[in-house]
Figure 1 (tube, rainbow, N blue to C red):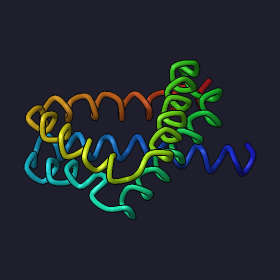
Figure 2 (figure 1 turned 30 degrees about the vertical axis):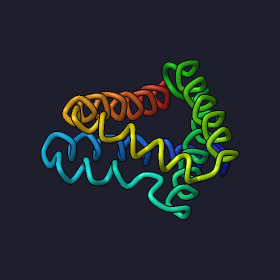
Figure 3 (figure 1 turned 120 degrees about the horizontal axis):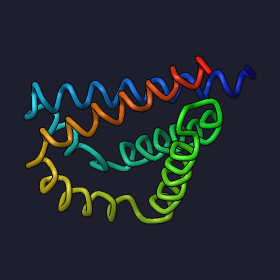
Length: 135
C-alpha cells in the first residue's frame, strides 16, 4: 500500500468514526449535538476548516474506494463531496452561513434521525473498509 493510500485509509476510518460519534451524541446528548451542528459556517475560519475537511474526506474516498466494498458507491460519494466542496468554495462564506442558519435548525428537530443515519453510514464506511481489506 502506498503512502497516499495509507493516508486515505486513515482519513476514511476517521470519517467513519466521526459519524459514529456524531450519531451517538445525537441520540444520547441531542442538545449538544444540535449546538455542534449549528456551529457550521459560523465564521470564515470555520467555513474554510469545514471545506478543508470535506475535501480531505472526499479525496480520501476517491483514492481508497477501490479497496473498499461497495467501491462504486463510495467513489461516487467522494466525488459528490469534492464537487459540492468546490461549489461552496466559490460562494462567499456569509452565504453559506445564512443558508446554514436557515436550514440547520429545521434539521436539528430531527436530531435522533440524524443520529441513526450517522450511525448507519459511519458503520457502513467502517464495514466497507474492513470487508474490502479482508478480500
